[in-house]
Length: 545
Ligand SMILES: *[C@@H]1O[C@H](CO)[C@@H](O)[C@H](O)[C@H]1NC(C)=O
Ligand SMILES: *[C@@H]1O[C@H](CO)[C@@H](O)[C@H](O)[C@H]1NC(C)=O
Ligand SMILES: *[C@@H]1O[C@H](CO)[C@@H](O)[C@H](O)[C@H]1NC(C)=O
Ligand SMILES: *[C@@H]1O[C@H](CO)[C@@H](O)[C@H](O)[C@H]1NC(C)=O
Ligand SMILES: *[C@@H]1O[C@H](CO)[C@@H](O)[C@H](O)[C@H]1NC(C)=O
Ligand SMILES: *[C@@H]1O[C@H](CO)[C@@H](O)[C@H](O)[C@H]1NC(C)=O
Ligand SMILES: *[C@@H]1O[C@H](CO)[C@@H](O)[C@H](O)[C@H]1NC(C)=O
Image 1 (spheres, rainbow, N blue to C red):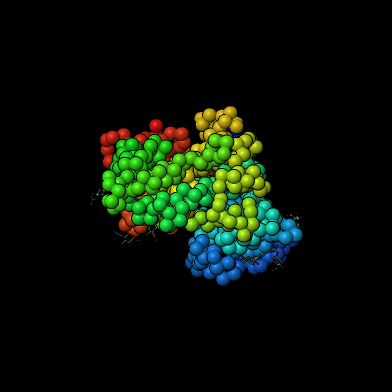
Image 2 (image 1 turned 135 degrees about the vertical axis):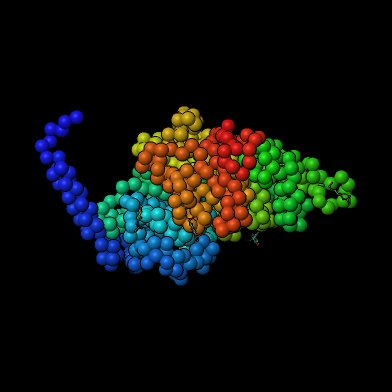
């Protein structure tokens, strides 16, 4: 075709010059070093903030956190900065008797994306490793202390404002203030905003989706602690079932992770087609602990008493309230994780439940040994600031174009993965939408053989954390087909939604030992089934049915 432009070449040169000029101006306009030296003064103008410091941190620096509450050291005691960034620390007043401490990690090489990280348990601990992971991917990243310092819940007592921060206000405030700091720092607002968290962090993500739908364009909510009140009661109720160590229904950690776990695998491991220690869909496992009952009352080795077998059956049964309504779905068989068994089935009340009942539902002197269904009902009715996080109407988030990815390890014993199915079905019935329609904005991936947020016998590395990306950001670990964070970015920015998430299992969970197997995790309500031919270590030997 003949061009009508008499001087196309000159025009191209002119356009190229304009583009070059624009790029050059944009680059010149952002001076990372000077932005980091002035951000403390600029950000001080944000309402209710006090800036502690703004430090330029070169890639490779090992940061330590001496100001952090010592109980938080399990979350992060030190962290290597993976890229050049400006680290801004501040607090924000949220009421006359509460406030949050937060940090913004602003990378030199910014993608225009904003991201907020979450927390875990009842903890008021900034998860520095998540800040490192996400800032290294070019997000302007923030993390907050959830309104209190330390892992316990004692500061909730007699201070509903600290509780409000924990329930919703810390994440929301962190996002609002963080976005403002990013705008001041880079001289331009973010283009897209994201959230990633697991456990309590997953609940915080859904809280924002439910109540602050404008805060994030894309949310990754892992193993979410939704249905929070009943979750906390459910975690406590194992103590009712199993009793203290001297009780006739009690079982040792070895009995749980050996005897019981092995017999569960014997009965259920091959339902998905492969004996690999992974029960892809534990809903299909109708475990019968009675098979473990000792054949003679005098032989107590490698077997259970009838009372213990009854207790095991109760552990794997749903929790109903006094009216017979479901409070919390069942623990899933196969989830008996050696690192977790003793905190939940070890003869003491689970620590989170203990603090919740002492400092929120009742008082520090309440006798927790008598906790019962009536108390669980009181907790459910109290539901402070709607911490249940069980609102099934996500239409505001849907209509503003938001996308949420949730995932849940099918071998998670701290928060039964059946709770996420319970919530998903609640969203489906509340909104009157079948899974094919929910797929437009909410996708739920069931991760076979993943324990609580990480680890387990399954292909649990799905980019959910730095560890879940092999601790090494490469084209492979950041591939959206195998990374829940980059996949939500692709969904938001390019409209490409994930069908499956490809998980990786390294030999002995050690990257240098190489990949043991990979498996695609299916989108609920489909389940993963081995096709009975081909190498079960290859993703292509499985399909979502
Ligand atoms: C919480 O810890 C931060 C340091 O991480 C400190 O600045 C702040 O004062 C602490 N807040 C409270 C209420 O102790
Ligand atoms: C600032 O703090 C006050 C309480 O001191 C609170 O009432 C107000 O909402 C806060 N402002 C913002 C923007 O958060
Ligand atoms: C924020 O920090 C300043 C300076 O340390 C302190 O005076 C103020 O009480 C803190 N505010 C909150 C809400 O923690
Ligand atoms: C900056 O990030 C982009 C991707 O967002 C990447 O392609 C580029 O290599 C990065 N540059 C540096 C200097 O790290
Ligand atoms: C005790 O019972 C278990 C389970 O039935 C059985 O495997 C074991 O051989 C028995 N031991 C003896 C000494 O009879
Ligand atoms: C990170 O991955 C790259 C590319 O696969 C590899 O060459 C490098 O050795 C890895 N680094 C670490 C610390 O594992
Ligand atoms: C597997 O990891 C454990 C704990 O990290 C270690 O003790 C063991 O030696 C490792 N085994 C192999 C085969 O590398």
